[in-house]
Image (cartoon, rainbow, N blue to C red; front, side):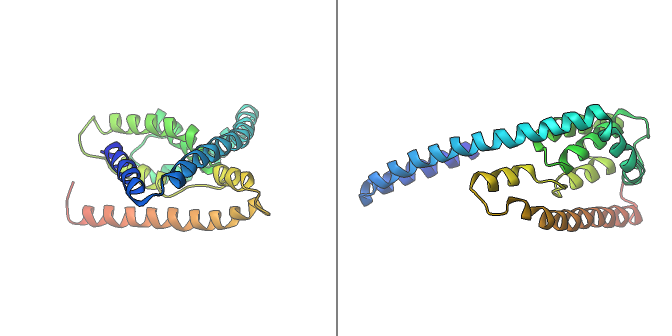
Length: 197
């Protein structure tokens, strides 16, 4: 469906430019946009490679395991239905660590595997369990400490201070994650009080 919308917008824009006499501007915008996209991708690659390397060092040095152990008691309280030694718990922690460091590309496959494990814990039922809902809420609440992608974009466009986005990101992450968890808990306990399974 989304592809059809894009095709419609492109065709409509070209036809409008033909009748409006602005085809030259459209051609210029198309090639300029393509050039900027390639430049942006190359800039992102350099920063992402750097942070992925840092993550690998942190993983090999045991820092990620230490962080996972540090956050494990909190995560166990958020997911009381998941046994402490179940593979889902390790995947959830790894997904959260990757998200905290702004590595969405690394976090996505871990999140999918964690959701598969949570679904298996739910007996393969069609409806989501409490843990699956909580995990989805936390994942969509922009859980980030180091926004590597935004930093890369700001550096690529010669920002005077690319790292100034870190503090607002921390504040936004705290607000969105706390708000998401509170709303998740509110609806869970309201449903539980009404006796809905």
